Length: 410
Image (cartoon, rainbow, N blue to C red; front, side):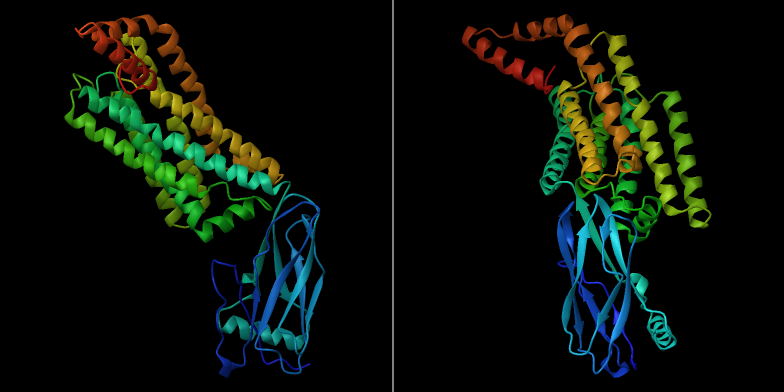
C-alpha cells in the first residue's frame, strides 16, 4: 500500500473550516462534521468528507473514545473513490466525550505521521466532540434559566443605582461592600473569560474532569463583565453624592491587600510555569468566593447599627435572591442532564456565589420586612404627610408603596 500523505483537520459546523493542504506536497484532508447533542439511547453518525479523492489507495484509521459514554467501531477504512462517509455512534450514558483518530500501526504509515508532524499537523488534533444528555428539552431549559438569572442579577444592580440617584446620597450603603465587590467581580470576570475563551485552559479543565462539561457559559461571562461596570458606577456615586463620614474600614482594607497580594503572587508563579493556568483561575475563584462569604456582613451590621435599611435597596436583594436561586437550579439541571455531578463543584465560585447570596438575601429580607418594618413605615408616612392635596396624596401613596417595595425609594 502506497500513500503519498495525509493532512487531517477538524471541521466544526458553523464554527471553523477545514484547512487546505498544498496540492504539490501530495497532502489530503479529512473533514469531520460536529455531531452535536444527542439523547441517551439514540443512534447517530459522525459524518466525514475526504478531499481530494484518494488515487488507488486505502487509508486505515483506528477510532478511540475517552470514556464509556458512547460505542463506536474500532477501525475506519477509507478506500479509493470515497469522498464522504460516516461513523456509526451508539450512545450508552449521559456525559461529554470525544472521538479521536489515529493511524493503524505499520511502518509505511508511521512515515506519514512524520510527514504530518513536519507540517505541524497531528492526528491528536482530529477530535469530534459528542454531547450525550438525558433530555434535549433540558438543554433548552437550562439555557433559558441561564439567561433568566443573568437578567435578574444584572438588573439587580440598578435599584441601588437609581436609589442613590433619587436620594443624591449613599448614606446607608456600606462602602466595605462596594470595595469588596469590585475585587470579587474583577476576579470572577477573569475566571469566566479565561475558562470560556481559552482552548488551553478548557483542555486543562477537561483533562481534570474527563467527560465533563465546561461550567462557564456565555451568560456567566456577560454577567461578570456587566457587574464590574455597574460596581464602577456605584463607586462613582459614592465619590460625588452625600456620604457623611462613611469610608472603607481598616479591616476591609487589610483583607483587600491580602487578597491582591495572593493574586499577584499566584500570577507570577503561573507565569513561571510552576502552576497551571487552570489552578491560577481556581485561586481567582476562591478570592471571589471569599469575597461573597464576607461582603454582605458589613451591610448587615450597618443595617443593625442604624436599625434601618434606608439607603440599602431591597429591590437589589429581591432580584439577587431570584438570580441566586436560578443559578443553583441551572447547575443541578446541567449535572443531571450530563450525569456529571462533579461539575456542580467544578466551578466553586458559581455554586458558592448562588448559595451564599441566597442565604444573605434571606437575612436582608428579614431585616427589611420584619425587624425594621415599623421604622421604615413611619419614615414613609412622614414623607407622604408633606403632601397637602388629598387626591395627590392617595395616588402618591400608592406610587410610593410600589417604589418602596421595589427598593427604588426608601
